[in-house]
Length: 356
Ligand SMILES: *Cc1c(COP(=O)(O)O)cnc(C)c1O
Image (cartoon, rainbow, N blue to C red):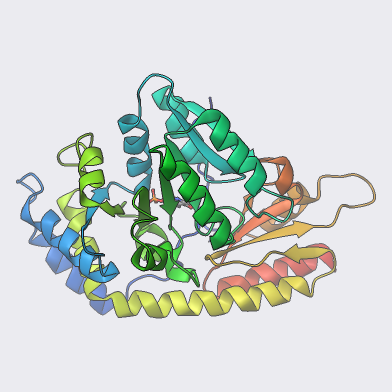
């Protein structure tokens, strides 16, 4: 194994980790400081955690009969799901390229892990998914909606059929909506429309991409009786009082974050169109705060993704080189959408590198 590598980023335009580029206004910083100063840090997390759960339930308009569980980032929830499903022979299945923690959590827990390649245009390969599900009968199937690093939403009709197949034998499907603030669709609408068909679905979200990556707060919604099973493996005080207070504060100012998300979506489209206009660059459509872009193969057989990645880095712009993560990502970089001036800087650097 290799430990999760975090790129050195001091002094860089940081467009590598899908963070929200905006910081709090001085007035909000002062208000938050006061709030955090008053938190009872001598006590174990208690009633404020319940307040946060209530605030999140209101924020998502929780469906009737559903409950909500908190995690120290959704990464913790992903680990807890693997732990809860750890019975002899249990497997986890996910399409790839996808979020690395699904495979990691399975391997660390000693569960089987099955990956199914997406099609070359990053859609779910329904026949391959269905065949793999029938062969392996996975306890958990992960579907990131939209997916990371491809940033696209998958066909809801295909997802409905896969959920039906997995639910029929008592398996579970996790819809991971880490990018919900930037997405045109949410599976929560499907759950509301047809709760029975989604009775085996867990919906996972996080405040990380919303704008609070630093505080580590993820949450998961599911029918109450189902969620209660997973709550059994959750460490009792897994969310800090400081995380909780900060999240409550952010939800009280949800309008500020919604406006930021809107700016990011506008910037995403500006960036996508500008990338499209560059010779040999193909940006893919996105429902997230990132763009996957493929670079044309150079005639000399050199590693174009590494070349562009290094060139950007030399110009103080840090992105993610995903080109070696999966064959389907050949010659691809993942670009997080930043603040307007950061995106302008990224584009200027790319122009220098590609069309000098
Ligand atoms: C970023 C991301 C997460 C992890 O979120 P944290 O709450 O920061 O742990 C989960 N799923 C996907 C698909 C992501 O891209």
